[in-house]
Length: 306
Image 1 (cartoon, rainbow, N blue to C red):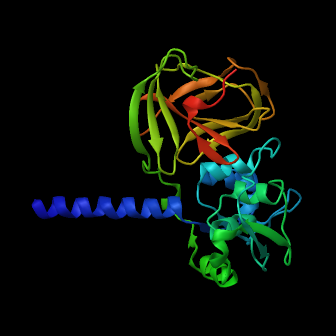
Image 2: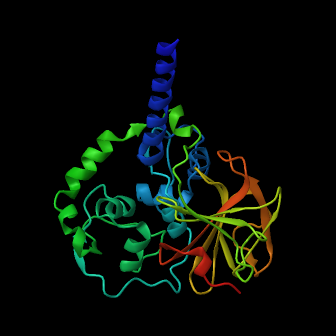
Image 3: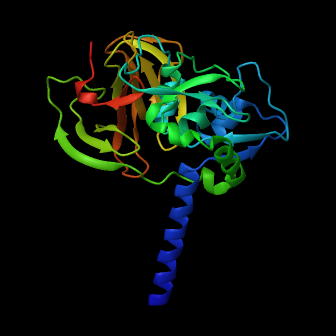
């Protein structure tokens, strides 16, 4: 009996290990007949813009059956960056930069990853739009403290591509809980939140924001007016939507049960965005709320409201 319990625990550990691998490691996918970037993005619960950035594809590029695509790691900060406008976003003028020359086979996604930068930072440093397609020989600015990562970048890309895992059912398995929980506070009545009087728990790690626990099917309201930049299901976060304010801040509302707006809509402060969903891990009626400035998360409690 003890041996059986031990083996069962071992199997659970191995299963979790492989789930983490597929959540945080790039994979490759062979395009099937009838596939589109949109259908593939839905299958892997990432955004079309992330697929394009990871494969250096323009909006006019057409994929073909048999083509191998890189399926990038699910990273909501990259998703936010690639589904927003650079308008009113700024990069730190004190950052020291060096020049990187684009090599064959490189992408914005890969260059950012190899240089320990976010895609947003790379785009802002070079004043590029998220739909921009890079070319061999092009010069890009990268952080000066990441020069050493550029030395053998071509070799890194080759080895990364060779080690990319083929997509299997494990990639599509439910994402494990990777959240690191911080302090729980009672909502300050003077601070407007997407939910009314929620229990607020700070979340750290790969996810940086707050979890807001409310009531069943509670209305989720917009706290800062802006344009809806993205609506969809995102891996590990359920139904999400990003709203960009006129000042360039991105407000990410995730884990919604229903969504009442669509991409391109302008939403005012206090407008209904949808309803709170049920977290699949905690089984609580809650959403995860994040705010990004220049591609970096900031304290949602201190983000501007109107």
